[in-house]
Length: 215
Length: 215
Image (cartoon, each protein chain N blue to C red):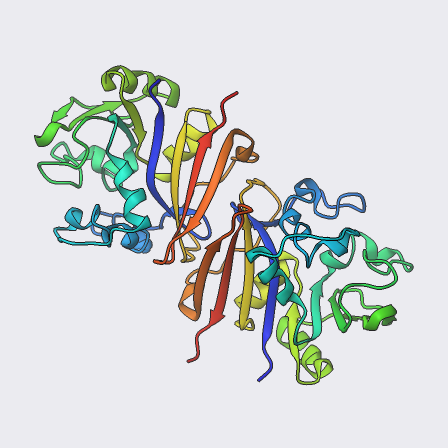
């Protein structure tokens, strides 16, 4: 049975998944790269920023689960580009000609545009749809494989609130952002539906996994 | 040099230190006892609810640090009693004749009343004072020992914001309260002033310690 998964989604101690003041020069606003330093320090994450090497411990063990078994991704408009990308017909995402998704990738936006086929298997499709409908479309495209919810925090929250997430891996980074977009708002009693594990890593982050309880 | 310390302060994953709807029958509101189950399961915490035994692992190692070296406590009005206790001249706290503080204990309130001497070394004093002034008073009473900031979340936040906390032990419990009083609001970049460690326990909670960096 195909699942809906979230991986490597980083939040601050105070629950922000991104900062304030997002722009083309500051994709995560005042958070900068601090939410993702743990990941680019791993063997999985180093190539994303053009490095080699990287750690191979618990952070890497979690990070590399991002890829296997995924047949499609759903992401929010805020992950695809900076505020206003909808007005730039040439915007093709942050990731260059070969984005790190390698599957059909559905961008949720109120301003859909024609699909964009990139190198390496990524095709961006643009959908103006609620979570359940988007998931249904992504599932069909995933051909029996799992669908990843790629973020940002608003999309993670919306899919959790709609009860559509089977597995979630969050990474709590020991910083206080103070402002930005919170992942947790409106999710009271979420723990009733999930088995939750926490494991702290020597790097200082804490990995949280949520696995949906079987009814 | 005497320090200002916070111990065993439990918060939900979404950062709430207490729930909503506090009352005499529900001291933590809709949070119930869920924030403190980890502690009453330890050897340190079991006697608080009249039990014997209890776990002796990492949760207990942290929990028992609550007492040693403390010469005074400061707590908020919301820890001393339910909303409205200020109008009840007979209210002497939640803890019966022998409260678990055993030191001078300063209750911050805009409605001070005469001090109350309890059994076992606890004397409640009532102060209408800002954090720095309250700490100065408590330090004098502590006679060279440390001062503990006992909570609730508003008091923890106020003392952190004022830069008055040397050591803080938080316990993150894997539940989502969704509403109540948040400990984290307004503490952006707190990590710049502290060494932070995180360690997850088999019980499911994660212990976070903050130690103030020496300048």
